[in-house]
Length: 64
Length: 217
Image (cartoon, rainbow over all chains, first blue to last red):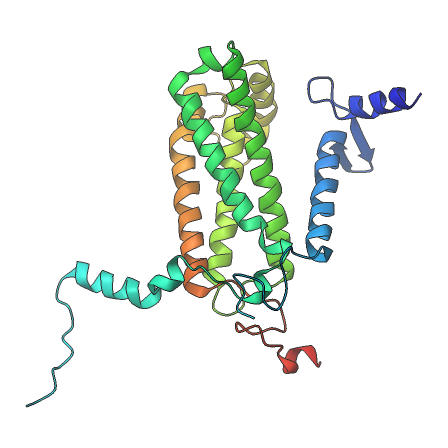
């Protein structure tokens, strides 16, 4: 059952098959492109909130 | 005894050298330390874009040397072709996150307008480079993309001298003019970042001190 759902979700962004599209008024975007945009937004959000490794008062390479 | 007078160099090479050293001292060209505010993931995406660009160029050179008959049929050719495609995907992914970060940081502050503009131009030229790549694949996918795109391109009026259904022209733009343009602009962009320094977050000066006049508003 879970595998079936995963297979359906993967099919929506399968780059080798027929494209699946989100149609919302004048906006039309493929699921594959929408997923990439969502991943970029997630990466941007995480880059703002996640602590940078080694960041501290005496971190090497830091002026502070 | 009189003090030696400063003599203006007479040759253009000497003037260029003096100007270069003045605008970018050696410790600023390849620094081993950065301000504390650079220790953030949002500052990683610029160099990630450059790393992806290096893979794009390296795999592109490999594809150009071996040719379509190789990248369409051999396993290694398919692999290198895929590396070229996915490094381009990562290049744009990282560049757009970098763009968002710099936009919301107002990265044109502190006499960095040219740095921002060179980044914008690099982004636009990269789109052209990627597009000509899609129409130069020499397969049914590229035929489809070309014929979908030609009406849009022709409607802009540039189709008369930039013909997307001309494979030879698109291929030459893709493997010579556009990569050279992206490379030159990317180098200029990096040099400008080094000359002006990495932009600090809003409300922090270049020494990492909080600017009370901004934060306190």
